[in-house]
Length: 445
Ligand SMILES: Cc1cc2nc3c(=O)[nH]c(=O)nc-3n(C[C@H](O)[C@H](O)[C@H](O)COP(=O)(O)OP(=O)(O)OC[C@H]3O[C@@H](n4cnc5c(N)ncnc54)[C@H](O)[C@@H]3O)c2cc1C
Image (tube, rainbow, N blue to C red; front, side):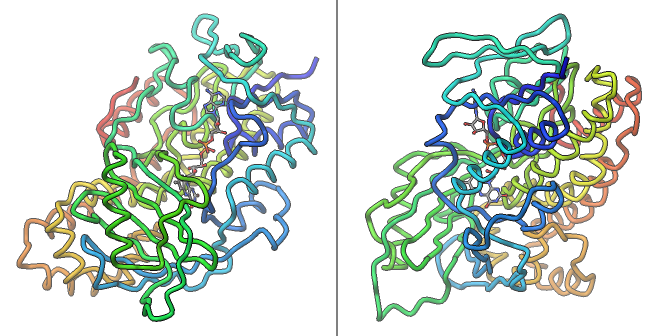
């Protein structure tokens, strides 16, 4: 009898694991809340093209791939732009989210994965400490799915992770400080031949003094707007932020031509435990996101491949905490360790006040620092540049000390992630999870 794998939600990492496992003879079913025709989001995302090579999925047709060249940062007022240049890296691409998710689903189907769309998962089904399936509700009523392994790819508000019993030792809720709340919409573009634009894509930090980032990205046919705050976001705040952007850039029209959704991204660090008996968590449900930029597509797809190879290595099909641990171990050793410096820096940046941000933009921020902070290369910043900035920053000594502390702590974050035990031995793993959890300021469950 073939082994039954259930994937909760058509998240990127779950689809990646599903395709590999189905190709290798596993009986894989993905259960997704949305109907196929409405799956995915109404916007473009930026990630790296070689992600497809890493997970053995053919690259999509180039006609679906756009470029991403970065542009300018400022804050908290719109103005005084600091240019940003990612070196026109051809590996950094942008892709329509609906096209991407449909492409992954088609690939899964070609590999033999079965799909159940329009069916909402409500909670995991347990047998003692083991996850053995999940309950669902759909147009045809309630149904329970059973499997040998459940892969949770249902995103940040996953009903699997959030409803696990405490004994699984898995974080069920993310605090508001570990999320960014977002409104994103494409507006019509107004032709303004007399307007002298200094940017195509502008990111405003702490716009109007509220912690977060807002962007305006002026495309050929539309204007992409993102209003993102570290804390709950109201329609009134969105309207105010968009009105301010429009005042500075008349190309931003008033008609929403696509999207217009309130969403959120986990920008904390990966949760301390992503596996349990009969369960593996992947993607946003485990907070596998680069903490400052909110990028999670590459990490979740790579994690999907690590998970699939762990499943295939478990020849007896036990899928216990012990056998699945190799997935968590390899995720931390190969991906999470590089996210840790950004996470440590993010903790300081999200706690700044608007005057600090104004001071930093007036005196400190420059392209090389933005490149390092957004690209995951904080440790590459030259010492000479740090010293130069420290001198300029003397009038705001307390702020600079906090930033210096964060910079110094980036190495310790990586060190803790790298210390993860290679085998699941409860005592050693509990000690490691305690240390990692303390770094994150969270306990287990
Ligand atoms: C505005 C915004 C912009 C972003 N931009 C980028 C970017 O440019 N680059 C990048 O790399 N990342 C970006 N991200 C992050 C990225 O979306 C995620 O990190 C990435 O998609 C991984 O998430 P996921 O696939 O695990 O979950 P999701 O994308 O959230 O997918 C989860 C799936 O599970 C389904 N689901 C949820 N609940 C249930 C349920 N109860 N029953 C059944 N199914 C369910 C959902 O319908 C969905 O299909 C962005 C996110 C947002 C919100």
